[in-house]
Amino acid sequence: MITTSLDAPCLVAYPMQAWKDFEAKLAGLPQFDKAVMDLKRMYVASAQDPDIDAAGRLLIPPMLREYANLKRDVIWAGNVTYVELWDKESFHAARRAITDSPERRAQMAERLAGLGL
Image (cartoon, rainbow, N blue to C red):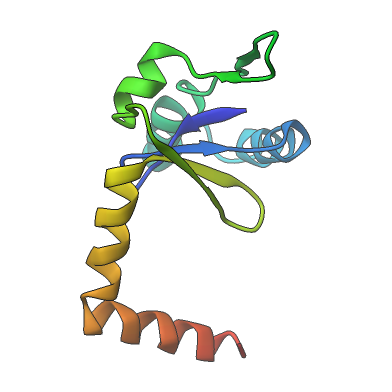
């Protein structure tokens, strides 16, 4: 299942079982909670189960391609339980924003240390 990211101009892809597990957890949340409603509208409503063509290529629907500004060159970026699909230029710009920011790198290191990593 593939959908829009909540915090970056990219797409997020889940294995089907992981997506079903996510939807089951979401179904258990209060349906009239504003944040839950927003999440459903932004994340769940955009989700697509993309087709695969005869050559084995994943066919990303136009709405999702437009959201992530996907052009010719894309990057699949693994994120433990899901993967992100980025326009190549956007991905490199996002990485530079992190690597060029001592504050953001320090926040990551602090968070990882707090997790015992």
